[in-house]
Image 1 (cartoon, one colour):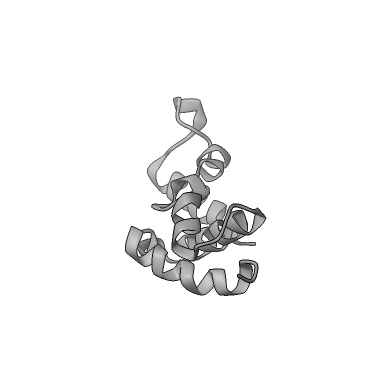
Image 2: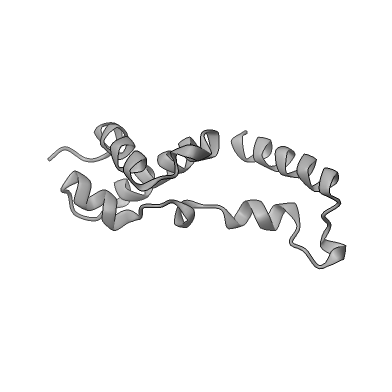
Length: 97
């Protein structure tokens, strides 16, 4: 649902600005696919250091949840804000210590 909303918003902007892949620019799908957890201002190493736990599937789940929050509130994609949000998200998704 969120991805669909993101694509719809991008489509509105593309129509308004006249962007099109025929003009040598990426398509909306390419733009949306390029935005992922790698675009966050923190990474898995930051998450593990913050929480104090070893690697595992939980790290990716935390990053995905953080990405969803950033897609809803882009201003959240700042290092300190995401580190604080990591504490809350990890309580739900990280394994017990």
